[in-house]
Image 1 (cartoon, rainbow, N blue to C red):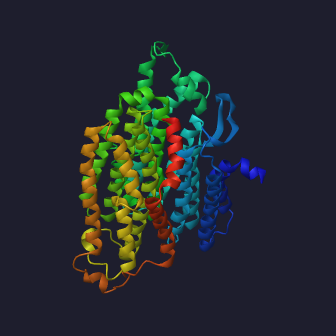
Image 2: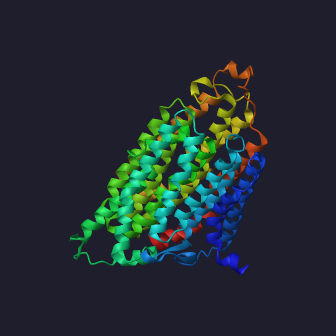
Length: 509
């Protein structure tokens, strides 16, 4: 029991990878065994995360459950793990969504073993980013997460999968080059990659001193943008967003669930964990630029979503729109650090990361449900389907309203907090972002209307051949009901998660 209590983070982090390696030795033809083994293995980190959450001390400052092991002694880099109120929320999101994504993949029949193994490897990569307190390990896990997703898109994607997977890899790796150089610079300067040490030493440098032949402020400005561009590509912020709709459109359903649900959050988490604490002056100075990019994502993401005829691309562009609010909250916190507005905006941004993970995963899953039955995502080919699939229709409306930000559901709480915190300090940007909020309602209602309402398309009522429009089944309900339950719980009673987030935010910002 003592081992469990002192190694909670490393168990959560590495159990998915250990399970994936065990799968190598399972009989090659046991498709059902691969599915249930991967699903069961992914539930274990979730259960341990619940233990972690229940033992988390709200009143303690700094990082908790810390573990440290020598990793690369020559570089003074260690496997240093720890969580605070922000990262434990993201760990909960990751371990909650991964089993649901694997359960959603039970309809996959092609090369099931490597498919399930990639999901387990992907979980370790994502969790490593949220847990790492060593900057070099942060970057390693950041890159590890790309590889499984690349192969999931490239091998199990749709018709244009080669283009989409290559674009995904080039954009995200290209953005990371500057991040790698900035990480190496910090490691060389201070002889350590430990984040807790770097926070203190990097911010205590004399502003009048010369560093690498340049004033400290110049070096910090260059490093700030190296970090910021890498994270902006991952979020993704406009105009770095164009890889996302292609990746979503071609990815398998479960891949899209984790791509939108967790992988996009890595970029926003990078801003919160690295950019604002390491570059507080630069964050204040360039808050307007970040807010401009965020508003661009909100407005153009909404316009782009409204203009789509492909159901999955509509949901994909909505992710650009919703993640823009996260970065708007981060920009406001950077500009007004130490004020109540900063705390409200940042708490809203972190909660929006969690909430968008739930609603986006649910929306992509529901798109996959109807695509599996109709073999089309063209909104013009649906129409009037509510009488044929009333349960599916009701769930789609519920999930769409959560994405819309309907009061009583989770999206309203987080977006309201971001706007409430950002408006006093970024009035013009926040006011312009309301255009995006207006068109959020437009594209959500467009999607619902095209699929469920209007004259019924008799093609689906005829039940021809493989194209049979059947109701959502029991397995699919087990995927979507936990998402709906958590969406409703946070919408009605957000205090249980906001208290954890806000304590960390107040301490940090």
